[in-house]
Length: 494
Image (cartoon, rainbow, N blue to C red):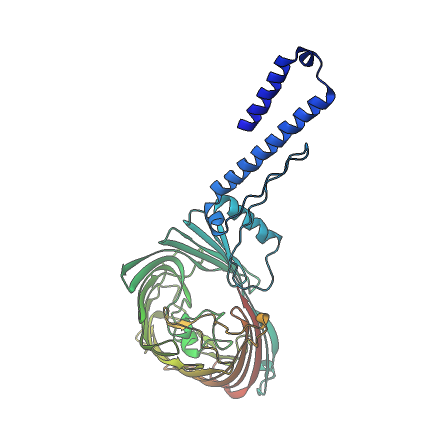
């Protein structure tokens, strides 16, 4: 600005010294003056733009300071200030940032907000660090074929979506969080996870959280593992049969306590989200705890115990069970009780013992469920147990989550998108299920061999070969029967 005033003062002095010039300045003199003023304006605009960018993005400029370019004044056209370059530390992803991500970088430069890429989708953080937001998604597609049954109606080849979910999760501050997901796998909208929560630290090494809403059970090892993280295409019969009548979800409250070597939870819920407010909900209480007495970088010993009690309201007391034994997508292949009504409540409990050492993992589960019947009838009893194991031939560690005592997404050492082989896992399982002390009992078992190929931490291919045996006394397929089911899956979790 000083130089601009000096230029104007010089022009006034020139006019005062030469009155003839004041009356008729030449065209060249006027052009020289305009060029000088335009250059001064360009220089001022450049400095203001640079100061404004530094004010709005101090962290970015401090991380990557820019040197001021020398001012070139040689033409009447004003020059633009050099752009402020902001580098964003992106996590590994399939492709480099596209136009949308570069736009987000410019927003960050202007506001201080951040964006990072995790499992295929971005995580957004506000400029002040108070808010975070992340889209969620899950696509799991299965194909299954069954042979060897003495019933033609069981020898089926089918396809299905195990999960087709879209949702979101986020935080407000350091304590409040929320999550919501809907599933479209049966060509219907089904609300699954939907809750809000509060978390905090009690003391160093001890935290808690409280969640309220539509909650996924914390019950058994694989019963607490999401459908996108199970080592087999279907959970064990312990998880699918030793279960409240309302199944895997309920609307209620769940406080959880976490310490360095384990966790404990207590859940109180009513029914699933159903839109029926004409009768009272059933009431379910579930408790679970796990402990890792051995916990190192490459070795873990897992011990767990859990139980539940459920009160059934009149009109909501059907106890009929049809439980998967040889594959989810064969509706004719189930262990069935036949129609069973008049239940007053259920009580179940179970234990978990397992762990891993390097790439090898083993897990044993067992449980029992008593369904109480009216009119003095004896309890309907369900017993189940399973033994599972796996080995990563690529040397990766099992995806055990020590905080929750369940399986999660694997951390693949050499993803195929980085030129590696991914993670390859061989699995095996034996499981046994028995419905007893009813007029129409049933029993069965299944032995499974599997291969899992994890392309990266959120993309997988799975194949299961199952030999199954089922014996029903009710339904269309009675008597002893056995056969083989071959199933395959491709899954992506965002």
